Length: 467
Image 1 (cartoon, one colour):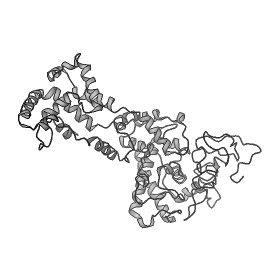
Image 2: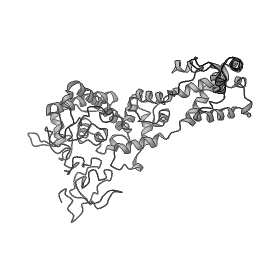
Image 3: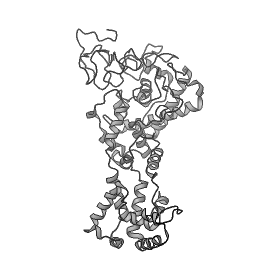
Image 4: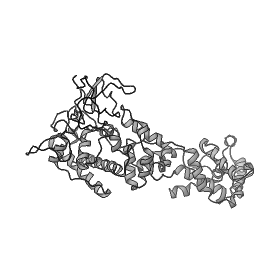
């Protein structure tokens, strides 16, 4: 940035600089391309993160400042160029407005300064803003000369801020909410319940890279094989049946939720709370940052310890049992390291305790997992190769006719058997039945995962999955 700004005081950037800038900012933040609009990067402070500096706007501001305050005798240079061009250049060049021969590698510096001082007339985005800036300083903007700016201070920084405000307006909150809706599609997200503004205030208290990890989670920017359109699409790294390596799945993945609950017992069953957008707390945001780092550490472990030829897309999990246990341990190790650094109290991964929590397997004394007060499992059956483990049951999950039809967004109720399922969600079929917390629909993903189940049982109505 300093070197480029120094050079651009006299020579403008090429036309493709804006596109390169947007690509570079995505790369710097390690975001998939097209995650943010160009203007969003310069308004990250609204999310509690430091704004990035625009190279293109900084260079235009530097060029105008140089023309107005630094090299103020450029009008004499331009006059000499015009006289020389009229005597030596072909008429066709003069007709096109050129003041230099075609073998020059760039326009004359005097012409660059003249264009900048005129307000970049060829740039529709900046020309109006430049005129507004000059009009705010002088009553008669048409009579302004370079000598007029001799007493004006902070020209470059003032013009830069005005360019950012006018050229790159944004509503980054609306963009983040849109990304969250896409993350949970086809489920409906209750926008009135989202607490993005309080969450952004809490983000300011986190370290910069922790805040960035939370933001990447909100905008669906995990480096999954599906998100980056990798040639080898991976399945769910936590063993879900017939599920892809996709963040929209991980936001509701029962296996990921089970291991989060095992390592950090206060983990909430509502994914909107887990990612810090409802009932936001600092600990929830730290949990998001730890989960982000642990997933990417697991993916690195997968790339280093597995044979790519064995990871072809398949309706069955391609990992054998011991490999899946290795993945769990790698995720837990990275999660524990990040959580300890952030001050979260977490447990060490223990395979036996994890299976007791996830599948409600009893020990020799006939007891249940000490991590939960109720005997209902988080998952239906222990992981075995080829088993559809995402068809889950219990107080949190119920059997479904399709592996995608479980509903992990509703809160679990410890003691109830049937519910009144007669109230349809907007735009969703009401012909469905449920048990426990989740409901089953004839259409895949046709239920609403945000609505809470009624606490009172419905008398005289059979809401079992096969009823």
